[in-house]
Length: 367
Image 1 (tube, rainbow, N blue to C red):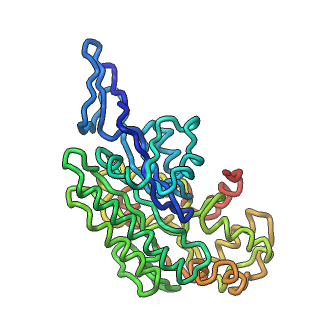
Image 2: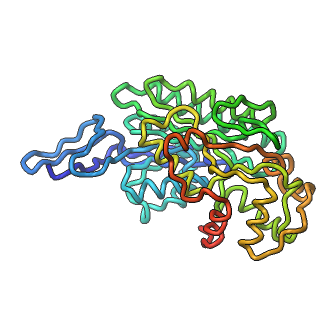
Image 3: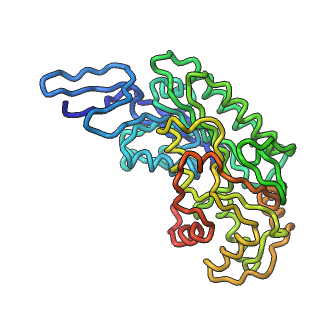
């Protein structure tokens, strides 16, 4: 047998809400489950079947992704594409997704708006759900409502489509994002995956978000990744923090005593990737680095890496002027440790924040 070649199915891309904009896209690749096996003497045959093992070649997945046009999702698409997996981007804005993943650079990627999500999810090996309006933005009553509803609506839709798929084309794994906001905030407590939920707004959002994902069929492996503050130069909270930091001579944000549970975006992408492949990844897994820091220490490292002093605190009012109530994400925090990731043997490229910041600030911003 000379190998397995991907067949081209009715490659539709599905649109969804992504993690970096109000309208987000998730990645969808060629076909899910339609394969052609070429033997030296046999004719090619295309059938909708599940193929989990490939002779003489690496395992090849078909992954449907919501939130694929966002900060995290777009990097996951690149990683999967580089490894020759099939990607289906589920999006609410096909034009936006096509501008981020142009066909000349990403031939074979499927981009599908909502009416086509069903066809994408059926036959996918796995689904990654990252959709949701970003929280590192200025909150208003309308934005707070959208922060919650965007996550619950898309997660519920994805779960329904998975559950209603025929058993022979149903995805085997759902990797669904949630956040460390689940735990609430504290300057003294340490939170792991067994810790109870908090009582504030973000904890409420996370509980309902996770509750929607927990409705998935019990035959589907579910990995809930509770994501911390994701560090990267071209998105997330750090991209908003750096200009404020520069204005105020690199001092701590707020009191500086609040905990900062972070993860480098590359490590998070690797964790999501591993969760698709590794059947041991199930249940709640904290998507954070193993060494959380107080925000004052993080800012000290950031000032050092940027070659700026770190002495003038950034006042709460400055952050609130930019982020409104959303400044809570930075001004209050929680000390979260990734117990499950350690148990699973996950290898961090950036376990310490100073090395993570050095790597990020050495990068050119991706347009």
